[in-house]
Image 1 (cartoon, rainbow, N blue to C red):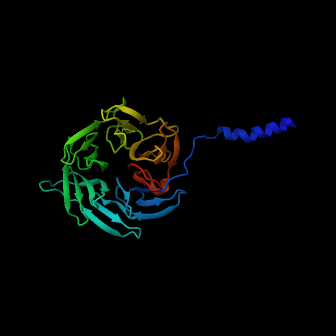
Image 2: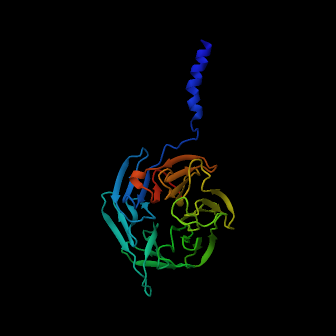
Image 3: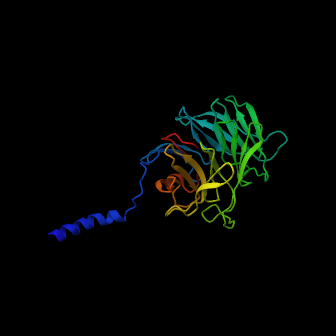
Length: 316
């Protein structure tokens, strides 16, 4: 009888021992967009689609505003604010600046505390701030070494000190500009000891940086784009923390895009063009334990480049 009881306990406990024992987050409410499926959608913690809007544009930035509206893009040059009833209640159209006749693309937007909207214009090589009436109130010229209307910029954020943190994809560099357009800090990405390789998927490798956020300690957290990694660098440019392409068990990073720093210190990483077997969003602890992943290929596909965590305040 004792032997049978022990055997029964073994059968119950053996499968549990084989399971992943990582702590798992209860989930997040997410706003995200994908050009392939044409979806801009809010997904609840349980995975239920709460709201969606048809939009086949290649969205690289989006925001849920305090009033419940969504700030994003519906074309390479069209910035819009969409209310929950799916009505466009504000719009701004970027056009070539005086003296420039080439293409313009917008990849980054941000609603500012004063109600104006920051818009980064690739091609025009500038950041503008626009008031609710659509008037440009401020212009900050960008210093771009390899001008490209598609790649001058990716994520851009206005910082609390009034400066601008700019990811310059074509230059493979993150630069901080002051309010007069002077570069006061920069970090140039390297290939991390791997050869450059073409491609948008996990096989591609380069220095085309996508995202960056400034941390409270003054460090900068960088989403490397096709650098396939996340790095944290000091003001002196020293890497003090990183997540490399294949460092997370069972996960391969491809084009690393979205970054969120959660109140508990965890980091949510956007993993675009990584294929159906890899998650699109990954939450990791500072000791690099994966505690939550998001992967809904039917809703968003392989082009989920922009997302926002909605259930908690975060740095992004």
